[in-house]
Amino acid sequence: MERLTIDMNADVGEGVGNEPQLLPYLSSCNIACGGHAGDKTTMRKVVALAQKHGVKVGAHPSFPDRANFGRVAVDMSSVALFTSIKEQIDTLLTVLDAMHEPLHHIKPHGALYNLAAVDTKIANVIIEVMKSIALPVKLYVPYQSVIAKLALQNNIPILYEVFADRNYNEDLTLVSRTSEAAIIHEPEAVFKHVYTMINTHKVTVLNGKEIPIKADTICIHGDNPEALSLVKHLRVQLERYGIAIH
Image (cartoon, rainbow, N blue to C red; front, side, top):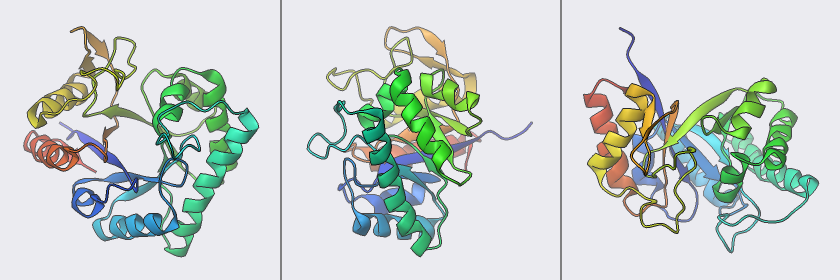
């Protein structure tokens, strides 16, 4: 029987400063590139750590809104949004080129990610950005989302992403952070949540139903106060159950 494998990622370079502890447990990372957090100095630091630990590097562009950490939708034209996302990715590419490190993937952040899952206009902007990058770069997307379907239609390689530390609604959107049930805090509960998604291709959502889902990469939010304990426990438990992190 072929061994199950999974990618494990986290959003980093966001000012938390826990990257030296976090990256040894990851196989890929999403680096903030100036929209909601980060600058060239933080990018260089995280890329160096990623190289040290053999972690694949991705860009983590956002609505250009540092005041709200990219978690609030910004009303802007498609052209302005395209320009902002492209500039953010290009900034990281400049750092990567200087450090001889390839860009592995792109994962939108916060409100941009959540909107792209359901909003065709926003999703199309991200698709056009992907088309403008002359590199074989993957796009991290939620299963059955608008952006996932558009990416497949445009022959853009995707990895389906699931969230280790977040609860889901029945439509596979994430439970709002305004709800006390949004975040899963207990390490063993996080493991069981993830293991079920990998092993059964289903997720138990907030109302108790089991909904089909696909998982190629697991995200733990780097700004979660429990991030380090969660990622340590998750990696140990997944490997104990025969699932390789790659």
